[in-house]
Image 1 (cartoon, rainbow, N blue to C red):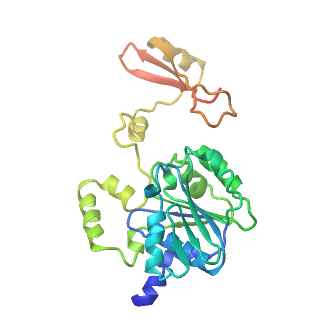
Image 2 (image 1 turned 45 degrees about the vertical axis):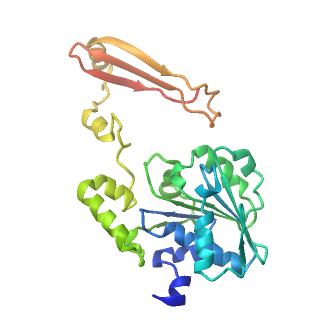
Image 3 (image 1 turned 90 degrees about the horizontal axis):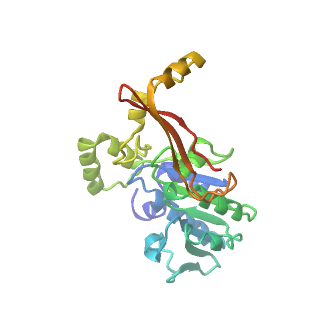
Length: 293
């Protein structure tokens, strides 16, 4: 694909952006042209009819941290400079289309004023908290409005992964797209990809193949460590008594968070763990009662 056809085109897997759906979740590794494709799809749609589009991310301390520049570059690439005007804090179309930009974490009360938005594009969705999504999603309530989320998967526990990939609402468009789905994948990135694959396979699968990481980088305790050392709970009271008798000390560890109860979704959970150390010198976590209380 070359010339005007290439300029107006999308990678095959990104053609799903042309369909209608309340939710569109596009996830995968680096170099897949996710953001690039979403930017041009929104600009082309906004050129056809007036739309109000919110470009959001969890953290945006300045416009430089937004997709403003990416959109501005695509305006030029697509030859839409006669339609769109690039402003410092917004991008506006001659037909009334408007792109606005906002961070969620520190401006969540402001987000509640965007109920007239037609489409919200959430970039780097893996960094967005459950609380931010819980506030944002019901705010986007205009008839026919859509929520687009792009992200590179990080941990399985991340809200974006659980909300849009593991348990998506019926009718959602969920698309995985990686470097090998990008027909214009540059040779410079190919060298970086191959180099990482040769020295750190786990990191390679996360960064380039869009797989969730198996553990937090630098963590003292990983899922593999827990799996290798997990013991079955006592089957009955006799076994339970034997386990307790084998412990020379038991402690309850509490990490208070200032949580105000089960409904206080904004705060961290209160960490509560019962642990003991046996006469054999081995420490055991007896129960994790962490929760909101």
